[in-house]
Length: 353
Image (tube, rainbow, N blue to C red; front, side):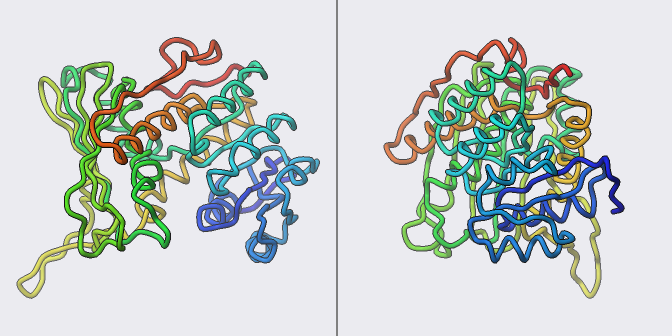
């Protein structure tokens, strides 16, 4: 995509699969922005990504990239444990951030980020819960907000991956995969999650040794709804994300992938997406475009740092439930004043310019 001198200069921190895809997206798909720096502790990998982005600057230190006059905003796509330091550096440089989930891996660190953002007096962070930008999920959200189906009673979710990455742990199914359903629950229903229970059947024979896969996760909410999530990261056949809301006067479902279906030689069928970048390609495009557009207006919209903190708190409860068994309550701090009452879950607030 052609770039202009007044385009937003973006530094992408982390050049693994997600970061490299964001570099491609900003350079080729999104309007109003260009990649001016990439950052990775693996300089060789960063240089390879930079070469595909027109030879932008390469750094191994996020703070050094943020100090550049060519950098107006930051995408954080590094591993979760590195997010807190990168976010704090962005705050020090007054830069808006699109931070891939998790905001941070643990609620204490996430709350520190929230408090640091609050000290600035305005939002600086949008968290990358991209399902909020998916067309089907947005249609479902809009339908629920009409009230035509009545009060949501149950939310069923299925989240399946072809195979788990090397080194994947049982806890990561909760904190890295089911984290998306935690945010979807809060956003779709407008409820906070109050407790988590995790049940584990006998592991699949295709799961790596020691991995408790699949898992069945149950949330209870402060609005009286019950939510379940089947997470199965070694299903073998494709990447599937589905959700069905059961309300007082009807149900609504997304994720059935009603695309091309063929019928030939006594068989019928279609295709199943193989990973999240394929299934949610349009959602990622919409997410980053919305972030760029808002940043150019000197605003921050979309999932907030508070949303990231809330998911971190639910994830921590989920990991305890997995490890110790039983129903584990979720403990949330009080939302700071920056996150006004009614904006702590279920909405996409915008900051004033």
